[in-house]
Length: 200
Image (cartoon, one colour):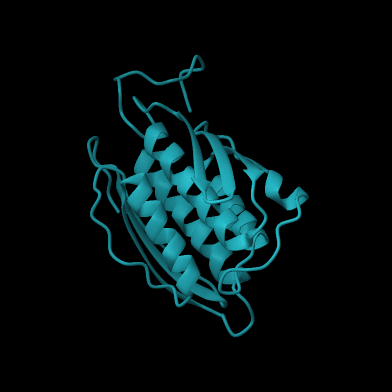
């Protein structure tokens, strides 16, 4: 999709032998289309990402769910990351950094991110005893989603789980914290680039 100086949107399609994903992202619109990936909990999380991030998001796709959710979840993260990278353009004027705590009953998640152009994921929940799954999706699937997102969008992302053990609440709290941190980081607040290097 062509991008103008004031257009912070992008549409990206990724097609493999395992999945076919199309993502449309608009950083300056809160109008979204209900996600349709064929996986109910993933769609629920993508809806939460759009609502709490206050971004326009459409994710349509299919995947080899007869095997397991891994390929679909990972490829949605990759495609979303590419769309975010395109929508950010040269990243001039953005806040760049974002941080959010989100509680969900017994669970407390903390996400800190930097739209640095450098990909790094620190995912603390993989070291902890998180049990169960949400519609077949575990915190390990979330890790692969975030890995795809960070690698393609050039994000430094730190995810901490301060409380909680049940997968549904853990995943949902992390996604909502990601959304709120991203909402702050993508805000345009100046005409300058937030880097002493002169490039992000």
